[in-house]
Length: 159
Image 1 (cartoon, one colour):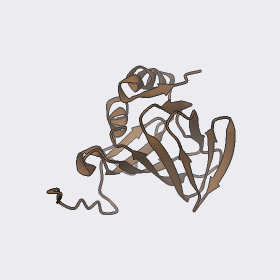
Image 2: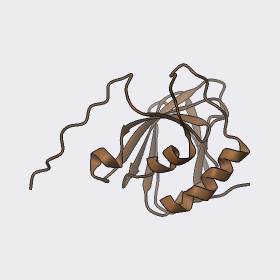
Image 3: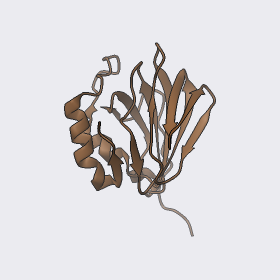
């Protein structure tokens, strides 16, 4: 059985940019182009950046660190992941990440199945200027994320 979809190419300075959860995401492949099979995006995580603790009821989620260091917390365990490290979170695991360093980190985030990018589109802000600073995660955005997350099968643990 052949697939009628065309190949999808995103060049280095292309891709939809969204500031959400204290980070900047550049969508490389979304459910729209993968027939819902997976999503992958690049994340730039500034010092102090990262989402609140949460769990997915639908997706596996993996983090591949390209540059810098990310502290990943999963089911009570802390793993410091540097460039070249990969951490996978099974469905139902409570997790979050934080850039505890003093310089931005970059990573690829992979989710399967796709669709979680819809949460970022709904609660984040489109980025018009790639050079603009990444806004920190504020209380109002945390509330928006917590309110919208159940629609996407995500449970947010708001402090």
